[in-house]
Length: 176
Image 1 (cartoon, helix red, strand yellow):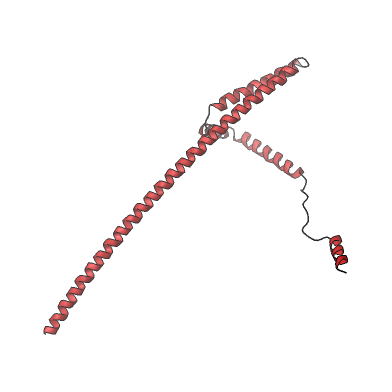
Image 2: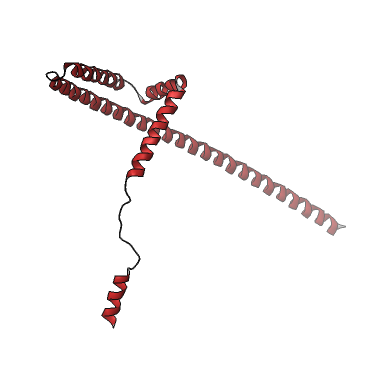
């Protein structure tokens, strides 16, 4: 019976050691899981911060481009006014229409100068909601004009990669 008692105490210590190892493994797994969750959260936050920074930089760049476009439109309006001044002597009525057009372009340039990308997007969306048929018609017209423009451009000549008959005859004459 003494052997039996030894086996029972040995089995009991193995169970105790197995339970300790199992608890240690469970704690290590829980700790690793927590670290992975923390790393994932930090990565998501970093990605979010980066996306926010890039979005902000793109918006700033677009705002600058809008300002540049508005300045160019203002210069265009000044050029139109100069043309209207030249037309004054020959056709005062046409010069008046051209000057009115220049004033409109200048007005829109000034209005555009003080808007951001978000404001322009909102204005365009509101206009599309109010006048969907007009927007659809303009889009169709633009598509038609683009189609006609690209269709009317001739094919570009490029050198053939296939040998021609004359080239083949010339190479046979060289070898024969």
